[in-house]
Structures are given as C-alpha cells and as structure tokens.
Length: 494
Image 1 (cartoon, rainbow, N blue to C red):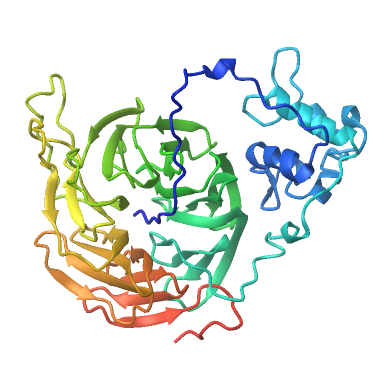
Image 2 (image 1 turned 60 degrees about the horizontal axis):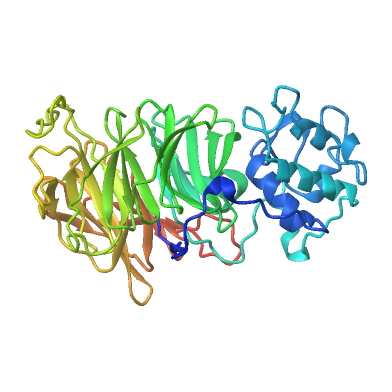
C-alpha cells in the first residue's frame, strides 16, 4: 500500500546560449569565512548524519549538532579540535589514503575535494558555531517532539499481523496499538517531515520516506520490535515520497522531487534503481507481484513501469495522449491477487521475444478525483490515442484523491480525498463491479492517507486535522477517533 501527498515544484528552464559541459564548470569558490551552519552542516547532513545521529550513533559519535562534534566517540578522540584541522578526527576520517579510499563516509566515495577543504578551513578558523537560536532546538529520542497542535498526518499503515498502526508525525513515527487504545513507541529520526511509511511484508521493519524541504531527502529503516534505527540514507536535496517494499523485502522504492524514481537495497542503503523518465515529482511507487517491475506515478499525469533488474523504463501504463488524464497522479496501490484470479498476461503482437507475465492491476488516483484500475502489462498493439490498459473507471469523488489502498484479497479498495473549504471524504468500493460499498461518517477534514487493517474489517483514515479515525469498512460507521500525538489540548479519544 502506498500513500502519498503532493507539494510545489521548481522548474529548470533551458538557456538559449550554447550548452556548457558539466566537466567544464568550475566549483564554487570556498568562502573566505566558512560558516558552520551554511557551509559545513549541509555536508554532514548529506554524507554523515545517517550513521552519526542520536538514533544511530555509530562509533559512539553524533554529528547532528555543533556541540556533538567537539565530543569524544568510542575512539576517545574528539571529532573536532578547534584551530587544529590536522589533529581533528573528522579530517583524518574523510581524507583519502594513497589508494584514493577514505574511512568515511563508510562504503561510499570520498567527499569532494571542495567539501574536505571547507571542513578543514572551518576548523582552522576556530570551528565557530553560528547556528541560529531558532535552529538549536534538539529533537531526538531523549527529547521527543512536543506538540501544541496535532500535526498533519500524511501516512499511516497497519502492521501485517494487525497489532500496530504506524502514524506519521513531526520528526517521528508514532506506533499505536491497532485499535487506537494506546501509544507503544515513538521512532524519532532526522527528517522533519515524514511523508510516507510502510511496514515490510513480514512486519519486522518499517520504511520511512521524508526529509527536510530544500535540504535533504531521507529513507529510514527501523527495527519495529527493538524500535531501533537500522538504516538512514540521504537522497537528493528535497523531501521523498511514496515508499514501498519489494515482495521479498530486499528493496525499498520511493519517489523524488527531482522527477526521479529510485530504489535502494534495504540492508545497506545502496541505490539499485534509478529512473528519470518522469517530468514532474514522483509521488508514489508500487512493485509488481513478482517484484520484477516497479510502477511509479507522478504529477506529470502518468503512471510508468520500470524493469527493476535493468533499471529500464518499459512503458507508460496510462494513455500518453494529451488530456487523457486531467491532472497529476498522487496515489498508486497494487491489487493483491488471490489464487482463483491469477493468470498470465497476453503477449502484445508487436513485441518480439516478450514473454507472458503474471497479470497485475494497480489502483491509480489523483487530481481528477476519479479512481481507476489499470493492468500494468499491455496486451494489445498500441494505437495513438488509446487507453487500452485501463480496466475500469469508478465513481468520481469530490476534490483530489491523495490516498488509496486495497484490502488483503483485493476485492475492495478504499480512497480518500480533499476538497474546498477544508473538507474531505473517504469511501470503499467493490473492485470488481465498481459499486460503492460505504461512505465514511465523521470525516471532518481533508484526507491524506488511508489503510485497510489486515482483517479487512476496519479502515484507518487521517489527514489535515491530525486525528486518526477507525471506520467499519462495510458500513462506513465511525468506530473510534483518537489523537495520535501527545498534545495537551488535543481532543480526548472517544
């Protein structure tokens, strides 16, 4: 299940002057007076803090604040000695040896020469702290976020065993008992915004996509039982969206604001897939049932399929005809297939050498407010203007659909939307005949995320007002609503 949201976009325009090759560009000069906050800290955020943060202090050393850099780690040496770059542990760790390899960043290429020189110059100038007072607020497991108002909830997910409900917060994921009867854990990490989260197929891990807008994107992987951060991988310079697991749990896919869709190895964070065929932010991802293909949706009004092993863009699932889709796509969810429904897709007549693939369908939804089910593999020769892969259009909802998910056997799906005047809506449909099963009562604000409980009886809904609501899937009746974050002024559970 994939839940997603959409925010702005920065467009890059092509200049009319002759193109300049990337290798002809000179790096920006190093400032005369190096700033910790503006120059040094961004380097540490992108390359170091994934392994050196309060939730994962590798080597007993934390790098998320200026004060931490002056402390000793397990090596009994301070990371930074002001005025003494050659005697500072950090400089030694990032300096390549004669073979061009550096101890840190671990298992990655060495820092760029410019980055290393900035760090050294900053230390040589006294390693001064110019962090603004407004940015010195510490958020970690020992100092969890405090809320004066409930945070907007952008993502929720039930654990496969039905015991837990993970809810996005500010700088954290809040783990609740699935019936809303109590908070059982707070997973506090680096990302200010948690945009998407998903339990692994076995429920032992939780993947989190988020980041800090305009600074970095981050993928986190948590050990659910131990409530410990296993992996933190920074990617791009903006927030990440639409996280999903491969069926064998070896890969984690996500969308990026740089118009790319990517996947990493879930055990070590190494990037294993990069696809740049989209023309706008990628808001959601879903693997095919075999894990051989990745489906991604974007604000560019397309759903696209990538072959995972080769990283090749294979096909547009939706029509490529201008105007066929009225608005961007914000949500995608693969339909589970039961044994009776499983079949092989047909091979298109114009695809020599192609082999039949297991038949797969996905739910797509977005700006036009119309849920749609598409098959992912084309079974007919493409004709300009066709939308052959579309299986069914469903009843239109009010506003934009931000979230969609199937029940465990794929017979039902739930969708949530947002429309004018701070309103929202959530419904359940029969995936086969398109009939509306239920409309949820008690929805008081825009809906940004929705999830079926594993037993298929309950659906959790959340969004702008920060409340989590549990509904009966077949009647839409409100079972319970509760505030997922500990806010003194929040409405009491009822």
